[in-house]
Amino acid sequence: MTFLVLSQILNGLAIGMLYALMAVGLTLILGVLNIPNFAHGVLYALGAYFTYTISELTGSFYVAILVAPFLVVLVGFVLESQGIKRLYQAHHDYQLLFLFAVALILQEVIIIVWGPVGFSVLPPAALFGAVDLGLLVYPKYRLALVVFSALVIFSLYFFLTRTNLGAILRAGIENREMVTVLGIDINKVFFLTFGLGAYLAGMAGALATPIMGLTPSMGLDILPICFVIVVVAGLGSIPGAIIAGILIGLSQGLTTIWWPEATNVVIYIMMGVTIIFRPQGLFGIR
Image (cartoon, rainbow, N blue to C red):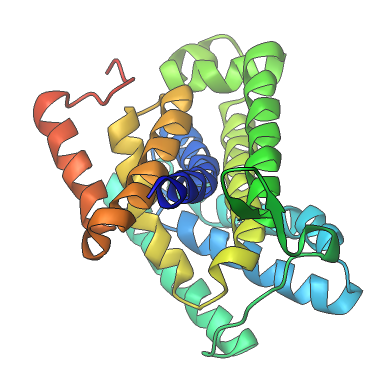
């Protein structure tokens, strides 16, 4: 039993780190642009499919996870500059409808380009197999995923808290009007924020390919979970999104032991309880 619990804790931690990457990107876009990005999930899917294609062409998974997220950033830049930017002064409903349409269109593009059948990607040879941790034997790739995701999150947190651009992004989350009054081009802030959110979604998709596989609907499957994490964390809370993402992953992992059928149900229960007893989220202040 101890082996099983430890194994599921590590599984939950690995999935939770992916959730954290996704949730931070969604939080940035929601906090700065004030837009619930319904296309965030399909950007995650594109990151996975770009990784698959690049790894097939180059024979290197490492090259794929480095290049694929930046291709997703290019898609994000196009969406923001050619679509969302034109709707900033429009009614909020038009922005939501546009992003929802983009999600469906890009999902169909994935089916047209890569086909309706899913794929699987093997981890690189150095990360193939398992490592003996003493109490259990655990897959190398999942351990590497936890470590690498933690480095990405730490780097992002350092960027947001220790750089001028990061301070501007954080200020945009707290008070967009203040950023504009200070003479900062808010449109550039929006542009860069959407690109950063797209990068995190693409990176999460790239890292997820060896453990989750690829299906055209993978983006729409993970999107509701991301919104649950943002709600549990509290709107605009980046540290909260990280912690809540890990908590959601751990809750799913542990639920698998005693009640596998409720693996997805438990996260929505957590969201409902949070909304009832702490509507601002665990770490939110507004």
